[in-house]
Image 1 (tube, helix red, strand yellow):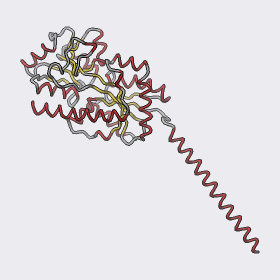
Image 2 (tube, rainbow, N blue to C red):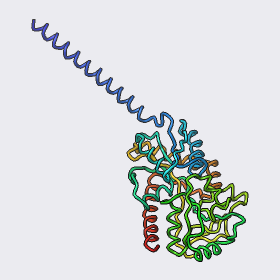
Image 3 (tube, helix red, strand yellow):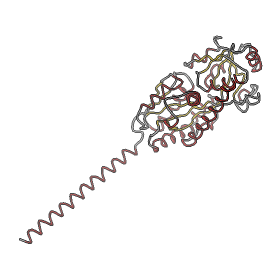
Image 4 (cartoon, rainbow, N blue to C red):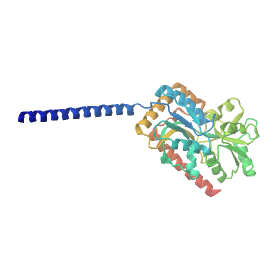
Amino acid sequence: MGRTLCKRTGQRILLGLITIAVIAGMSGIWEIQKAFAQEKYPARSIEFIVPWGPGGGADQLARKSGKLLEGIVHVSIPVINVPGATGGSGLAKLLAAPADGYSMAIYIADSHALLATSAQRWKLNDIMPVARMIKAPSFLFVAQNSRFKTWADFEKEAKAKPATLRVATLGYGSVDDITLTYLESKGIKVIQVPYANPGERYISVLGDHVDALYEQAGDVAQYLKNKQIRPIIVFDTKRFPAFKDVPCSKELGYEIYLPQFRSVIVKAGTDPKKVQALSDAFKKLAETAEYKAFLHEQYSGEDSYMNTEDTLKYIQSELDTMKKIYNAGKEKK
């Protein structure tokens, strides 16, 4: 009897050990499967939100980089235009999506400027930069046949007839707005004419709807090549190589040179490994000959790319500068 009991007890113990081993094995398999599932990113398409209409600089960047990115991450990158509110509508779409790395957006200096010029529903810590892809100075352009042959001509009339000259801009609260607010504090008061649609903004100066256009050279490259418009000032610390005869704001005594940057962001809270994977992928595409040619067409330097960490530092620094310039300009108006 005692032997039978011991035998049964031993069998139960053995069965229990086997059960534990099986469960442990299954658990191990599940963990391994889970790990593999987590490692595979991206596993499906990533939507690329452009908070502006088709045809503008942000749209051009998204379509060019999206195409190149598909060959690197091996998933589709559909571009979705969500214009409105100086980029605010597109940002709202991004922030409404899960922080899973499957939605990203173009984030430019003009949207960033909103944080310096007005109260917004979103904050800087609501987003996470992936990479900076373009950095370029802004200009004031006039029609080729404009009566303003130089910046000096424009400056003279703007001071003599305040609030009569019209300048096409992206909108209030943008970098354009900050720059014009600064110039107004220096006695150059113009009428700002906002155009949300990039195409309409570009041609406004050709149809004599405005006297000048605030823009980056890359966005209006076709009009420059066709000799339909020309720059009269570049807002930078030095003259731009492609337009050596055009003065820069610094040499004229105007300490205003906020560059236009275009970066890629995801929603804050996205897995850092996914953010890093995206940043590395954008770095690879930034090093391709096709993207370098694109930067040349955009009148932007090949040093435009910045990784996640450096972009985060950069946009924080730019925000501090924007707030300082905008507030100083408002006080002096």
